Image (cartoon, rainbow, N blue to C red; front, side, top):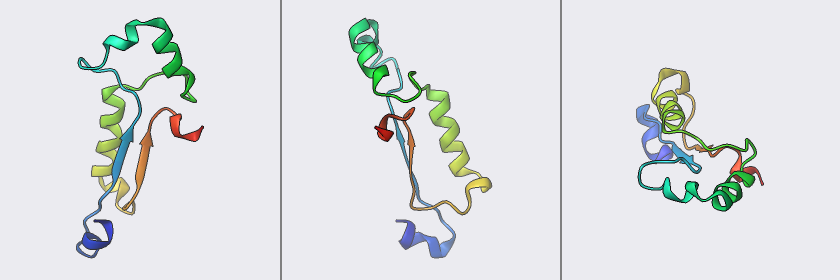
Length: 82
């Protein structure tokens, strides 16, 4: 997409969030062993929030990111750096 639409000044990026608790998936976090296992796989040793992922999306939608296209942004608290 980035190559296809870049010539029109349109950027195309992907945000890859890590584990972010929501009303749909928060139940497993109530189990200490599951929560500890998830946290142990993140460099920051914490979960993300919906607001933090939204901030990444807002940045990509802003003029401040006008030279970023074709990127995969890992907003995953460092899970993929393992």
